[in-house]
Length: 64
Image (cartoon, rainbow, N blue to C red; front, side, top):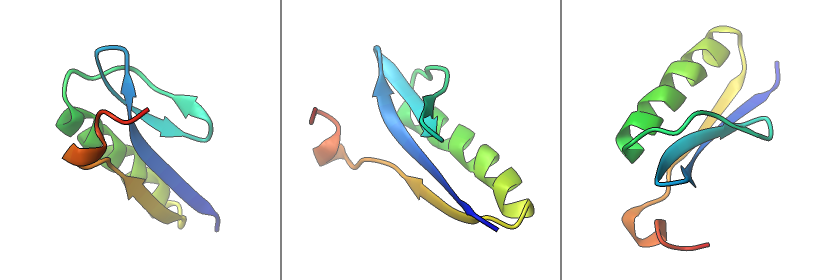
């Protein structure tokens, strides 16, 4: 199977999950976006894909 990559990114005043070039809905917290990424990744894992989830650390939160 293929590779599925999920990245938690800044969106407006919150956080979102980027996947396949698309950025999803905004979440108030980074943790909520991470939980959404894990849920989506679980489906991809079940389908046999390699999974990567990336979440910026505190030092990376303010970088453009």
